Image (cartoon, rainbow, N blue to C red):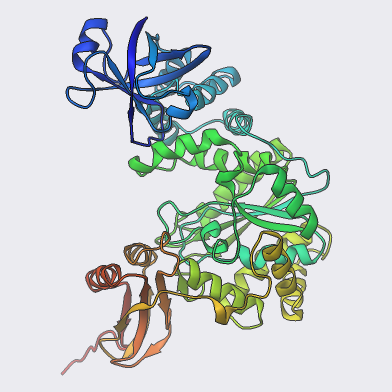
Length: 503
């Protein structure tokens, strides 16, 4: 044990990290990435060591912003530092790296130590990469899912809970803003917990936040959902399966999303919210996360099997993911388009997908017989009941219940992309659209995004507007426009591909 004077470092990290001067590290035989116990009075916290020659002096320990409140320290306070041995969970990770099956207790150990900060990013990355290459058995998958769920809070609504989830990957997928009010209108309970965007221009929570607050506690969510029958909130504020967020923080810089971890992530949060029935949206397409219908069916049976083992009935919808859903990408633009659909307008692709998935939930709940759910969902949407229910949900979450699509404000800075020739749109790139909308400022700047004037099969004339970029700053719109010119997100071709002649 060695004592150091606390120095507050205004850096927020996703992991518990402390800084020690390299001379001190040599003196007490501590290396970068070693684990240490930090003790102040009765408070003990595990952290990982980084080293420096300049940021902290000898005899000092740099405490990052995320650790300051946990240790309840201020500048100059004395911290006792003790080197810790590698936890057993590190050995279990090495076992998985060798391709061996883990036990329930070993998986729980890895997950618990990840949350407590006992594992370094490198060790967690090793576990994720091992999952990527070796996969998990069904037993391991169930144990991992339950372990993730057990790290956070859970909600018991004391009545059947219905849920919808998408594996994502397709821009403009604002279908939850239609599905939740349709299903709730039919008398089923659907407390939708959604994510914010990580690499996309807008997550469901980002889009809903244009209409109403989305950050609530588990107690508040339960009250909201039971009052209106539905809710659309940000899952990150609920502390549902917080271990999952730790793993996501490691996945993100590696740009990997191991299938077992993805399944566990989704199902753990459904377990935590008490879901009994779930419809899973699996968009398939060249630039979607799921490349083909065959792969979609394989993944569907995987989710259904794991759901059965967890007590959650799962139905999967394999949907078209080859281009954006609807014609808008970005929080405010998508919120406006969703309201248009609820108001009786809106694009066919958005309404078709939303009512198909909502219909599956209505069938689950016994509101329609198998095969008739979409017709009922369409009827509820056309009647105006879904709009009325959405207004109730918005009001309950603290938004303006009288808001309509024409009142949604989007970015005032704009740039147009025009057709360079006569022809037909033959391709709309999901990947390019994501990049361009984010360059424009989405999702941080809610008014930023993209409006499409045509999709695959649409006939255009030279000089016609095919896409418009919106933003809140001219500099961001200029950046997005230049990126659009470089990426060519929309392909336009004539119908005659080639002339063959014997002349």
